[in-house]
Amino acid sequence: MTGAETAGSVSKQANGKTATRRGATGRPASAGGGSCDFGVVVTTGDEFTALTTGLTVFQNKKMVVPIPGWGLSDLIFARTRAAIPAGVSVLRIPYNPAKFPPRDESKDTLKDRLFGDLNAELAGYMREVVKGTNCRHYIQILNSISPIGTSNYTVRGFGILNQDVVLGRRIYLYALAFIRIFDGRDFSVVRQSSALINMHHSLVVQRLLGRQIGGPYRELPAESFPTRPEDAADNPDLRDGVRAMLTESLDKTLPLLLGVRSAASQSDAKER
Image 1 (tube, rainbow, N blue to C red):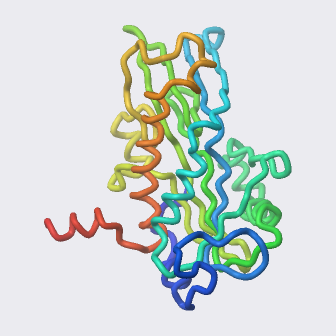
Image 2: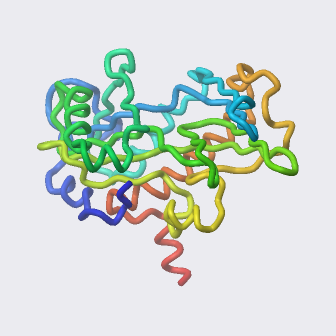
């Protein structure tokens, strides 16, 4: 995936005109006609995966659990809105997964990039999702995917991993989001990046450093893995852990992609 350094400042382009729809209240514009600076589409946040991997494929178990009560979609939009400068109009675009099923991100392989037209596919998909709106840019937040260590297994989105290792088991809670910013005219991808907490280490560097998952994750005690995976949706510790990692990663990555200096980065600069 292309990192954050691939294009010029998006926010400067959006700031080129006075916002007309946000108004004095600071509330996001509602879906409908008219124009806006940024349209935001959240296509993730409604599922949590409980995954067990063994030394053989026969030991692998996976259950995907609905988590509507976790409020991840609302959290994602709130952090996106917070990253966009005041005075810039923002439109939250409702997403219906039944009408627009999520793209299969596992298809974004080297083979598909060489022999397929991924950019055209992404543009066509987003055109359909945001049909009826007119924004200068569109921001999509979706699941990110990561290999598990050096294995052939992968994790995606939000979940908990129960990994069998030689000397026992390791439990990892993860929150993997991916951000794409599209040009609202031709739907080309302007910038894109996984949402990361440590912005100084790319996913490639993280893997070289021995990180088990490329993106935000934390190791938990063995008893943290739910005895019944379907009970994960009612576990406040898992919910709060995912929300905390998601918030931190979005707050650090979105300003960089938008060309906006966050308060944290400004504070770091003053200290240096």
